[in-house]
Length: 184
Image (cartoon, rainbow, N blue to C red; front, top):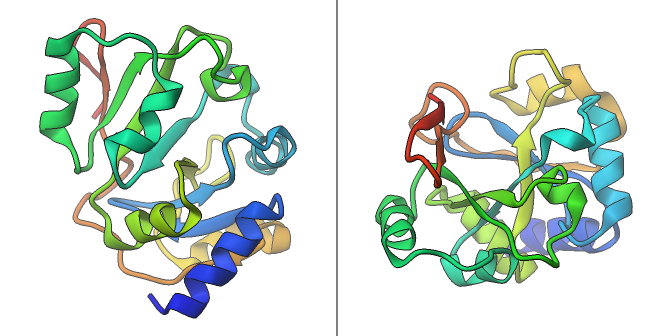
């Protein structure tokens, strides 16, 4: 990914925009997680309920740590053993984490991504990003820039082109409280 395109993506994100980018298995939609207007716009674009909560991704655990509450050392070790990598964990949220991220729950879904372009985007942005599949709710997740454009039109401000990771679909989600898989 060229430095110019990363800078352009960061400008879009900091301006309240939505960026589509490849992830481990599908194209994702991202925005600044602390910009409530951008998150509301993303949810409206997808037709997704605010109560479902969202995933945050980052290139390093330290970037998502401020959004998380107290973690049992064994739970933290288990999550870190999967990262960086294609596993999303649902962990206790910090009390100050915005409800538009948690869906009003006491937990937050987070992933330290190993996808090179997604990680570079987080690094260039300087923090975590919202990461949700690039599709309308109920529709199949998109796996290409053309799929993003066909499903979501011009409502996405920027599409970064790149290869997907090795998964055939969205990342597995593991519940930190029980250890069970919520999504395979």
